[in-house]
Picture 1 (cartoon, one colour):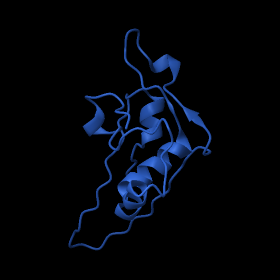
Picture 2 (cartoon, rainbow, N blue to C red; picture 1 turned 180 degrees about the vertical axis):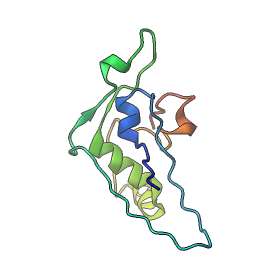
Picture 3 (cartoon, helix red, strand yellow; picture 1 turned 135 degrees about the horizontal axis):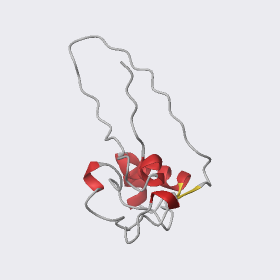
Length: 114
């Protein structure tokens, strides 16, 4: 079987038409193999909804810088990095959105700024 997971950037580009897949790893009794392949844009690429996928009157995400988003999500995901952030050793980008901005959990609320 092939499984294609939608990521944050595709959800943003499609203005929510495709929803990012939540990452979950489940322990299963059978042996299985996984060969992930990731694609990403350059760090400084500005990502925003494509105009042709935005309906009149529909709220849109303001867009973001791809690398800054990945950096902020990583810092907020790992405890040791969160601790460094709390101690002031790391600084998030000024436009960083909160964790769970994308995916099923975020469908009902806009980008919560920290």
